[in-house]
Length: 323
Image 1 (cartoon, rainbow, N blue to C red):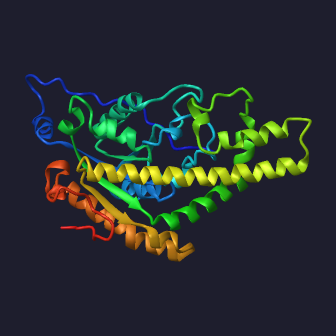
Image 2: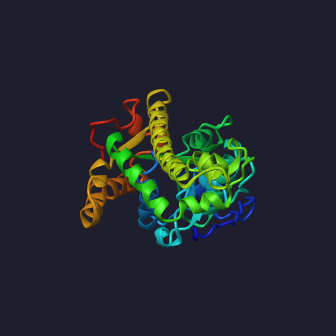
Image 3: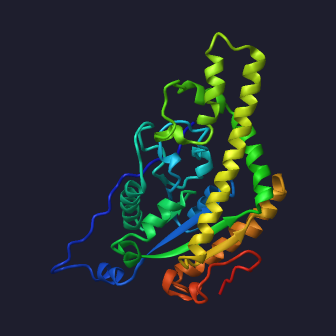
C-alpha cells in the first residue's frame, strides 16, 4: 500500500541586514498560521485535513504516533496515495519499526516540517489522534510555538455509541483487506509489545493466535476461536483508545482552556454512500471551511482572539460560531 509523498525540504530563513526584502520583514511581524484537526480514531480527521488542504493550499503533518512507523499500513490505517487527493503528507512511515519515537522527537520533526511548509507558502495542517504529541508541540517549555504561530483547533467529534459501531465495522474491513496476514508476517514469539510499532492496536491482540497457529499442538478449532478473540480484542481496545482520546481533548478544553471548535460528525457516520458524502459536506467540511476561512482572514487569532473569550472551546450541544 502506497502512502503519500514525504516532503523533506527545509525552509531557508533570511539573515536580514542591508538589502533585506521589506515583504519578509512584514511577514515576520505576523504569526504564521497552523490548523490542527483532532478527534478520536475513526471520526474523520484524515478526511477533513485533506478537505482543508485542498481548499486552503495546505499540507498535512501526521501526529499519530503509530503511523510514524514504517510498515503495517493496513493495521495502522495509514492513508493511501489515492485518499490523499494530491495533498502532500509528512511524518508517515518515517521511523524504524523497532525504534522508540517520543513526543520530543515529534516536536523536532514537526517543527521542521512546519517551517518547510510555511516557507513554500502553504498552510500546515496537523492531524492525528496522539493528543500528547500535539500538547507537547503547542505548550513547549520555551513558548516557541505560540510565539511563532497562530492556531485554529478543529475537533471532529462523534457520539461514542455510533463511533463504536463504525470502529467495529472498520476492523472487519481491515481484516478483509489482509490485516491478519500483515501482522503475521512480522510475528515474533519473543517480541516486546511495549516498543516500536508492535504497540499498535491489532498486533499484541494476535499473539495467542499466532502462537497457536505455529504450534503443532493446537487444532483448527482452537485457532479459529483464538482468531475471533483477537479480532474482538482489537475492536474493544480501539474503542478504549477512542474514549481516551476524547477525554484528553476535553481536558485540553476544560483544564488548559484551549479554544477548540467542536464539529459533530455523528449523523455522517449514521449514513452510507451518497447520503454520507452529502452529510459530510454539509455538517463537517462546510462548517470547518468557514471556520478556517475566518481564521485565515484574521477574524480571530488562536489563543489571543475571541475564539477563547469565554474561556472554553465549543462543547457538546453548542453551535459552532462563525463570524
